[in-house]
Length: 136
Image (tube, rainbow, N blue to C red):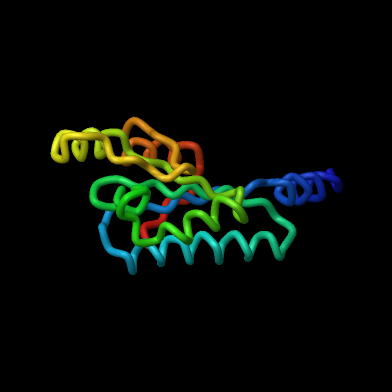
């Protein structure tokens, strides 16, 4: 029985922290804030020797963040791809289809964007799996 607290503490030490950040606004300041939060959280846990996974989920007007042709944070996204392997970017296919209908062609996404069927559903599923959901 004396070893139970040690086993629990040991299990917590190897736990990976999981954070999902929402971006749903076409606002460069908010996009930069989301990237700043991701970088700060990543550094915090890295400095402690802990692991953290971060998913940035873009939908609605926030999908503009992940567009190759008009992202106001394109340079930062490229640096995240190179230096922050624990941060991934999720692009809502529902929003992408709506943009395609409106513009007549599918917008190109940045190389490090992964498609998900629906951004909000992705956040809901991550929440069920114990991820912390934040909208900076």
